[in-house]
Image: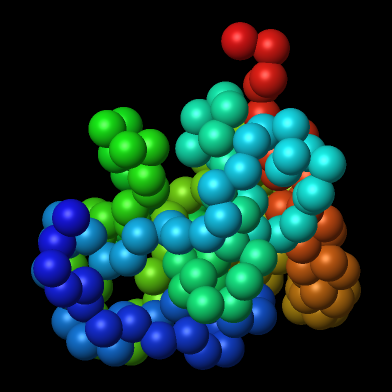
Length: 174
Ligand SMILES: [Zn+2]
């Protein structure tokens, strides 16, 4: 575990709050630990909540308390960081995949289950997906683009709902 993490701050992002670099972060650096209350998968399923991180099939971290800053990191399909499982103590660290500049939002990929099963690829609100969708729409029809944007806001609510159920979607039968 590093002695000192890079400076980060919580601010408004495109889709709500997000975590941003408050100084330049080098590639392959641990940015923050995903901290929270450690609970069982069973308890997590009972509790629900938006900030559950399934570490193993049995251990879940519940970052419902706002002091657990890593919970603010949003999903991205082309992220600049990744979640790393330290198997010796079953802790989760967020590590930079490339150099992250001061002011840049920190993101990691929540994984295939989140994207395909929970929100659906079409509903992803990460910058990469939104831009890709907008480019496609622009070609078709300008007016249709505005309709798509309105729809995008609605799927924001769906996204929140999806995270609530995150843990239940993890395989528990192994
Ligand atoms: Zn995406």
